[in-house]
Image (cartoon, rainbow, N blue to C red; front, side):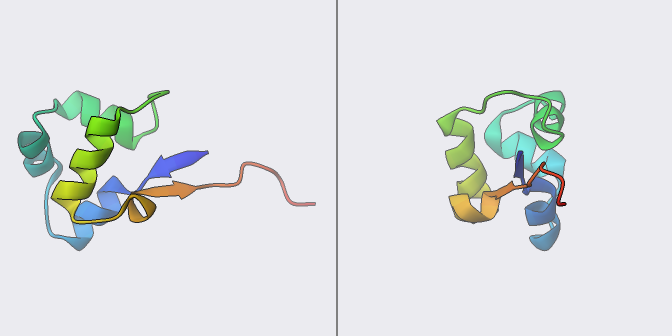
Amino acid sequence: MVILNIEKLLKDRNKSKYWLCQKMNITNRNLNRIIKNETTAISFRYIEDFCRYLECSVGELFDILDNKKTE
């Protein structure tokens, strides 16, 4: 599963979700849906904006969690 590290990046930079919503012109509801992986797609515009405002690379923005159970 692909996850976004938005909350961690915000915390590391001492920024709030409200600040990010204002910068990106996105609703708090939509941002929370993205953070909680309740979306099936994310636009390149949002990826670019997240990287710009959170001053991170795409690699820092995303993580992949392995859903497979280890045997």
